[in-house]
Image 1 (cartoon, rainbow, N blue to C red):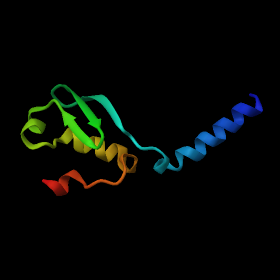
Image 2 (image 1 turned 120 degrees about the horizontal axis):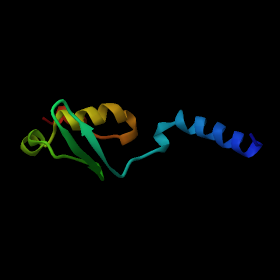
Image 3 (image 1 turned 120 degrees about the vertical axis):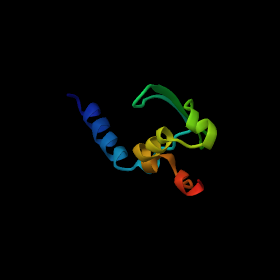
Image 4 (image 1 turned 90 degrees about the vertical axis):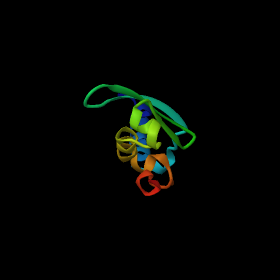
Length: 84
């Protein structure tokens, strides 16, 4: 392995230990629930899910799970559970 690649691997490790360097702007995932799969999206701090519960309440187990998985990487925002 060449020295340039070793330096990049070292920098990647350093960056991975500093998740505050990363801020998500938007993404979409396929979330496999117990009964079916749903598209879950995040755009400019706003969640969306295809499930009926989200349509009724503006929050669901799928979006709350995504917040737990991503943790600090989503940036400072009000926890969804507190808003309900």
